[in-house]
Amino acid sequence: MSLFVFGHRNPDTDAICSAIAYADLLRQTGQPDALAACCGAPNKRTEYVLNTAGIAAPKIIMDVRPEVEDICRKETITASFGDAFFEAYRRMQEWDLRAIPVVDTDHRVVGVLSVLDLMELLFRDEGDPIKSRTVTTNLKKITNALGGSFQHEVDTERSDELLVMVGAMSSDGFTARMQQFDKDRILVVCGDRPTIQLPAIEQGVRGLVITGGFDLSPGLVELAKARGVSVLLSPFDTVNTTTRIRSSQFIDPAVDRQVVTLPAKMRVSEARVIVERSKQPVFPVVGDDGLLAGISFKSDVINPPRPRL
Image (cartoon, rainbow, N blue to C red; front, side, top):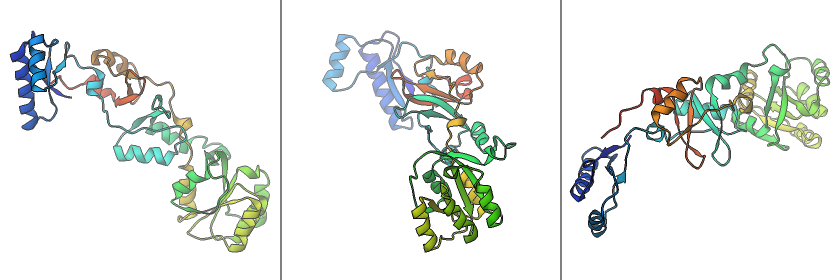
């Protein structure tokens, strides 16, 4: 919050010039946020002095009660629909935030994403063996989550509801298992196992993930190209690969769209009433243009810093 330097209530030339000079001194001696202010518009004489000196008039502040924009955190991060779990989670870790606003392409607030809601993506539908292995994402997000690469790629940015199947059984058993599902939804994960790789490619699955840092053989790559099967390479073992695939799913289902925002110009005393009644973990602050201007946590609003005068 800025440190405002005033003269007296009815500012004349002496009061305004002294406020400007003292604020400048403070900025040069350890108070970089010191700003000159006045309680009313300068008179004609003062305007003449300021114009002659080439100095801007101080900010007019008629009420020193803090507004939300005075206490909010203006530097923050955001998420957007279509972001992957691992992308949003890494940002939140880097900034040590437990919740962040979700914005559209115009930077307008459309929701809030919390760590707790984000974790629900990994553990939802645990009682359903099919839904618990289904991830809504695209192959490019999966490759990014794996830190891997493509050996062959087909339509990698298309969003899909993918059923992750680990090739950990006999070739015949796995083939029969694959035939129970829509081949365009199947993402097969296996290591260096040609007996699993071949039937998966012949089936025409959506993608084949080779784990353990292995490559697909040249002959099977050619077959994958003929069948339109994307081939992804993972440096991790099968267990870690499947975990990272789950972290590639879109955050959209975890976003709370019933979001409470705070106008930047709202008095902190008014905002306190709103946040005390809400369980929302973070409150996006929006400017007069409707765009995100910052964020405030409940503690920021309930226990704001005192105005500095």
